[in-house]
Image (cartoon, rainbow, N blue to C red; front, side):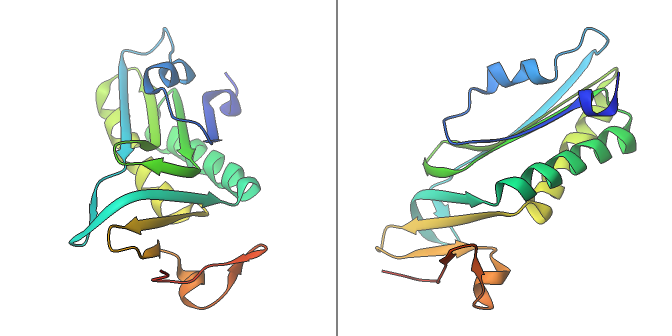
Length: 161
């Protein structure tokens, strides 16, 4: 199996069917499967969150997503790894990100799955905007925004009404 056949990274604008996503990593040679689902929660640092919106840089996301997954396959010896990140608006309880990994045994799956989501959180060019009950919104973990840079053709600002 070629390395690129063992990984799959996607961005999605529609709700994720996590059961269906398992087909991306299903393999008859594997006895272990681990997955992670990141859900939209109703609070952040003591503030009530109403919904989220994600924006991404698709070309760079694809490149970085594949790099992360390929590195996980090599580093942990897993057979297959996949990740899907949502973009656009999400409601409370929606799945924002899904990671799935298969291998011969569980330990490799569990370790690789955790490593992949950690890498996605720090490396993927995805920006999260939280909408709060007090009518404000805020871009989260957007270092370029905090420095006043823009992402493509749109500028982001913090604590907008």
